[in-house]
Image: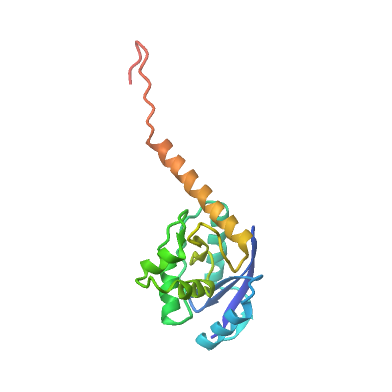
Length: 192
């Protein structure tokens, strides 16, 4: 079986999407300096080669990314296939629990997975995430609130965080407006 790949042009950079079987195994930035290491790891762990093309999984990923960047999707429902060590998989699966519009420091993230002394290991695993955006490693930041490193570059990380902040603010406003019931008194002589 092969890893089917297709480029996706996002508003903040080019991503390489990859599917293996019925799962997404790759959504990685083309500017990523560890691009060849990610590819090598996927080839080795999945015993597969990369071929250009498309698949049902990639088509769904493209549609969901389009909705996400249009601020119409807050969550993804694509099956993901993480290829890494058990520790890396634990980190990547925990990324899925960080809600949209929320950031967390590497230290807090390490505490959440029960390994408060493993900040560097968590940061390294986060940096090795091959499924950016879907497994939102961009939501992990420095303890001082700094953006720190990101495979797509700090400008892409800032773009994604600002996009998600706008999404959560517009959702909050919609909920608040839906909760407001406007009742106007009937004029004299009017009936329902």
